[in-house]
Image (cartoon, helix red, strand yellow):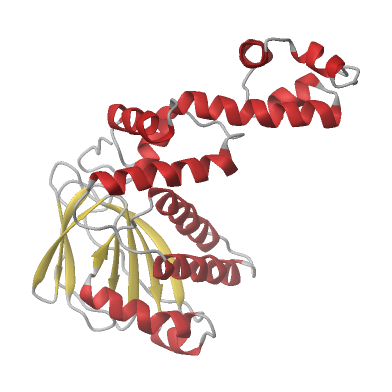
Length: 293
């Protein structure tokens, strides 16, 4: 991402935070080149998600590297500041919690203590499962969008999303420091599990590689090695199996094609005939159904 120096869309100083009566706030901060932050501490806790960029976090006299898709927890009173990479400044989503909320809320109060203890050992962390990491990114963005609402539903929606974020972060193991082959193979198995629930979406092999945190070449090599087929073939097989079930239940060729995730009917016909040796209409006739579309 290119960040023009001095652009009004990017900040050169930190956001000044005043917590509302709910004790919970979510905001986004995209840093400009030249962003400067003095060491600071707050009376509230901060859970920070790094969207983009690279840099360092100075926390209580220690320095930690931060990069995209990492999480940071600072507790009340901890002195800290961000030091951005001059060529690749940070973009952050920050959730601020009032201490009273953390102790009074029935769910957050249970999650807070173990979460704080883990963060004291590892204040900067990412998740081992890239697909859970993607899910978390969606959750924190939902919290951000809820924070932009100005109606009565905004505050409870923020809280609902934030509770989910905290629960997932606590339940998922952090990523190990070394990226061993065994971990890469585990990622492929998790990719297969994720695909089983998302193959109808507009997803490409390049998207899967990015979600997996692997290069396209490494991902495609590992996927075939671990599963015995290419990632493209796996996506197509899942879609065709689903399309066959939809054909039998609805008799509608167009419906089956679109709902299985195929972008156009021509691609569907070609893939279907290649796999089954017959057209969708002929398949329906064999199943005793009359084509409806």
